[in-house]
Length: 232
Image: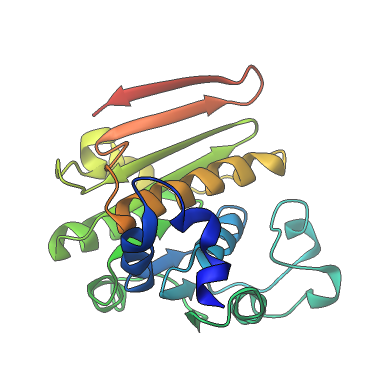
């Protein structure tokens, strides 16, 4: 059954059974299971990442459903992580899914990061990203940055083999983290694009493929579909 479940990726040259075994032994912390976290969680579950921890303090709302594809209208008001965990277990009962209805905070960040091989940022604010960056640098763990707004998005691998930090990308990180939060509009498919790319990058990192975007920021403008990659 397991061989059949993953057959379309184990047949790939450069991935194979060895790559699948590495995925099955890996643990990932997904911080935020909203617009970005939904496709990240779905694709990593389908790919067979052995253990996923879902961290999010929020409940499902109607305004989420335009872009947060893990949820449905009858689940409005329910904790996102509980709904997401049930859906993911139904998709792939062979993996471990742990829901945590909490924020990523100074009190829990070091323990959470230490317990996982990779952290994926699916948040919407620089205050949390700064905490992720600090905790991952302290633990020597890589993490995948993701950001969206309106019709654009970005991803990068942070603290990978080149040991680049978020502060290398944003010299004004402290100011960004302390600035008041603003709510931006977004077309629902944009987080689908960026979240799917975060999941692809995670599969590459965890399975032992090359660490693409290590210390590099990928950007896409979905108005024109123009892309750009810069080193930082």
